[in-house]
Length: 385
Image (cartoon, rainbow, N blue to C red; front, side, top):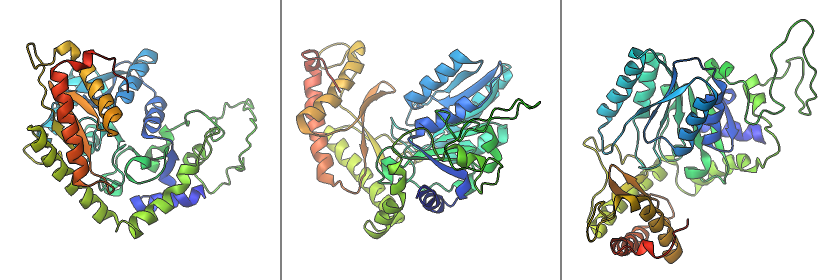
């Protein structure tokens, strides 16, 4: 059944089945890649400043435990794609001039917060030109945007199927072209699929393997596939839902083109409506590329500063937590709020089960909460998510 799910996912993505396996989530896949590489002094992991927090902490851990360091490309939205790509390439050159070497770059297809479309295909091309490995964090991509992995050919790619493909948690695919599979030595945790290198001189250990995999190398599966076939005891049932999810999308929802167009159109309309209610603006660049996905970011009517009606800088993070917690507690509505470039924002998602009235209700609730925040009501109780 697992092989059938992998085949269905590979067919959907138009990639060879022996280049794709399942993992619980994108964070695990990126851990597998970054922990698999061997680093030397001067090696650098490049990333954008909008990197997902868990991956940022992974890079910090690797800095503690090895000789690698992280390098950050500052991104302040709204920024045009050309400038982002140019700054990304310039940072690679800057690291090189300083005697370092960018081993691998990690970047999103669609970033989390802000929720914007990243020109990831162009960043992959830069990596190829500069001799840098590309680890694409597509956590929010499969089912939301077209990927074209066979054409773009990133070095490593992962995406959560439980976010936009309508598969139960926890399920993600991990794509590694054959040319790079030798770099992935182990799963996390290391399990029965691991195949130790020969120690020579008759010192190889015969380790019991309960998986029915021939020890003589006669398996039709690649080492990469075997590595992730069984990774400790876990619930792999979400992996087995891929075929039904794809069937639902095609037969009930009308297919990929229809789903993606509907969600993008809905999120854009929702962003415009929310901005009108909040009397603010939608985050967008001059190229109009940030909203070419099912996310839209709307500025909240709050200002950081001193004086009546403003939020003291030291309280800004507290206000973000209070807004999200209060919205959920009081209205049964969830919309992430965050700080970016000195302003408060909220992120809206276009989904097949939502209508414009849902966004209007949420925007009005946020407007009321922002008015209460200006009166510093958030100081009256400790916010909890």
